[in-house]
Length: 325
Ligand SMILES: Nc1ncnc2c1ncn2[C@@H]1O[C@H](COP(=O)(O)OP(=O)(O)OP(=O)(O)O)[C@@H](O)[C@H]1O
Image (cartoon, rainbow, N blue to C red):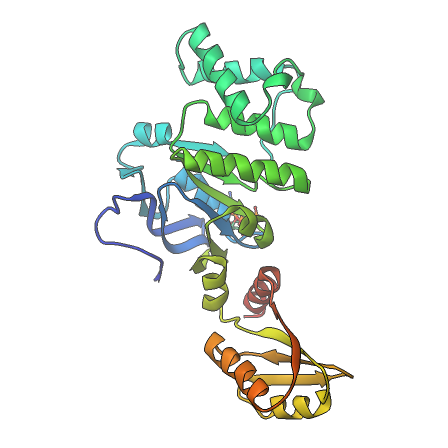
């Protein structure tokens, strides 16, 4: 079983508690024995390559699909036992959600506010205004939906998702196709919503996109959860502690290179006039000891740099090794 933070009783402080979830399409297992909890108030990322099972997981969380087996609790509510309450708790923004071209922004939002039964016309107007404010589109409310850019469309759909004040937001690839400025705006909006108590579960197949906006992330591939935690914890769980170290010296770089070559966890040492570059796969403690000993051995170190394997590189490795197996 792949399990992260699973607990036997309903996890009271968890906004999302997924237990032993499985989703089959006929004979094909799209989500395989997934257990995961997301604490309240977090912006939590789900990352995985195409076909990992992200959307299938989200379809179950948002009650659009029943699992083959397993349990899901949203704010303590068993979604299979109490569908109506679960639907009030959750807000879902699907990947590339369409907006109708023949409505103005406010008309589109008012239409959905009415569909949610959000009170009188005046009450709906107030709620639509609040949601437009939340996504910084107040001054665009009379614009036609067909005139919106990709980033504005995403914001309108997010405003629609917020209308019924969901405590749990599920956002499928919300940053896809957004430029860096629009991604920064999205990140700030999500952080503000989380600060006001919402829990946000957001997917992407680009890890750096999620690392920017999430407190924690989990990695899925071929339906299974591979790792979960902070960016560093995930990197560690996926077994990639490899880093490239560069030492710049005032003199004796060649001698330093052969001294470094004899040390534990060192690979592939290259040297030039004043620099030694090498790959290192030891612990942080080992790395500190190596630097200390190098200086004690009399080498005059001017600078020292570390470059860790990026998340993207780790994910590509994982996806490729799975493809081969
Ligand atoms: N309705 C369906 N019928 C059959 N197979 C499906 C169905 N929906 C998804 N799948 C398969 O289940 C697997 C997981 O798909 P899913 O859409 O959940 O992945 P994903 O991680 O969201 O991928 P992407 O990043 O490409 O959107 C894929 O192999 C997909 O082909």
